[in-house]
Image (tube, rainbow, N blue to C red):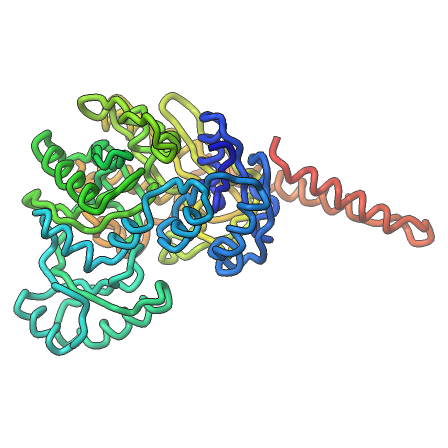
Length: 507
């Protein structure tokens, strides 16, 4: 490989660009009209426009991406996560064009993307799955009868689903039909596939997943677990490794199941096998994500392994050896996803301009982001601003460092989840490691407590407001054209625009 086309944007595109530099590869970025000034565009060796802001017209347009790959002279494609990263048709097109696909084979993506097929495969491998449908629901009445026999509550899930889309919790038979129809419509819109299945709802489960690397020789290797139980709307927001409940025996069993799952589907490259763990620490296969995960940095922090570089090595194939793994996770890492969202308004996206953006620093602190001060959080894409990853020698030290890092993380101009993360971190049940996927709903059902400023904070806010008003006044003054009759008003505006553009770049 010599030049990698990164078919993605934002934080993950920046992450892959950095890995390319480390591995001695050139990077070619793509960008939509909305991302013209994005950080990944500035950092890549080459950058190519791919069209309007709408994802279907840019980042999800396979024909455009393939044309850009040819124009850029790329000999490899990294899909990042999201967008086309789990699209088998894209993987197949890249391979058919003679380029290196930095990800799993299209056949493995297709097999594990079909939740019903994946559940059947896991059963054949002896991997426990959550009790539920044997296949997709083709008769709502018959399926309801079987669900009643299994006992409510149950979860309705999309066969082609993921990320919580097309999912409904059904607590009684009377709600079955409406939930089924609503979930099927949502799945059809999201995935173009409205097929549904059901499974028993596990009460207050933990979400624990195993990072795997599949080698070119067909063997798979487990790289410990990640605890991802802190979620809102079925989306992870805080992840950590190791899991607070993990024991050597349970880790070995889950790793064995994950390796069996990966090898059974012919998996190659980085992937994740997700499980639900109930109160008795019985685990069930949930699904396999056939790509790099958003939360992969916590694994990197406790293993010292650069997973993106390992993806490059595996994709090259020749002579790959599995990385040396410590006998157990080294220390403890916690990741906080910093979103531009309003936690007190059901985490609705809060796009806008980052008037202030200052990342924390210190021992064990890592920030993966795709933004800078002055950048826009677009309405067109996921409002992820950054991932704050904090490492400590144990969970207590990781939490203590996290408190400091969150306190120092300064973002202004948009609402963020930083304050919410601090409240979760201070919650007694979180500190004890008593986690479950409904943690936020149970402990923050009405939203996080509003911030009540003390006198010091009030004074700081007043000073900040005064400085902000002063800077806005200065900025406006640059845009006042010369007096009429001066004959050079147009030139003044052009000069002011250039000055503003230059000041948008970070220093």
